[in-house]
Length: 210
Image 1 (tube, rainbow, N blue to C red):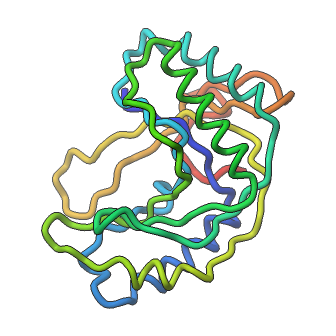
Image 2 (image 1 turned 135 degrees about the vertical axis):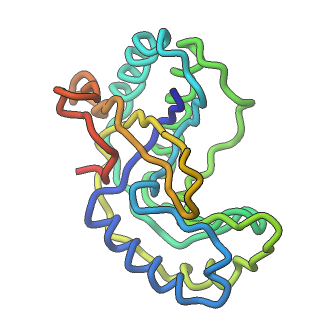
């Protein structure tokens, strides 16, 4: 299964950002971008890729341990940026050191559980809003400038979420990936993680953190 560890914005922060994105989509050239759906807006901590289900028990233990060692912290969505002409993103402010530490611990947990990980790179907090269509070469700078004054409300990050991503298979234009919370790990002294899936409180599609 295709997995990643993430921090999910709470509903109020997600709605604020959705309002800002609606204005961005009125800018010239917006039709040349592939915009993420609201469920796909998250701060990825570690991308694990395709993970053998046999590794899940050990991965669960290690992610719970990583979350337990990290105290809750404050975060807010702030401004934006871009990676070349490929990716437009919203940034973060507040507990960036804590977010970076949680990302490092999530990546280390996956490696120690036996998940083959990409080469370690410095962590940069970003929440993907849109991707350029191949060959269109949309100038993302006007979108970044429009986001420069965006300042979301702060919230307390209280959990690490292990998310399963199901890529589109229908071939229908504009279809979005589907996301499902596999595991929710409370930060600090909050206790052990909650498994996703039917019959478990952490199951179902991924929505913003509550």
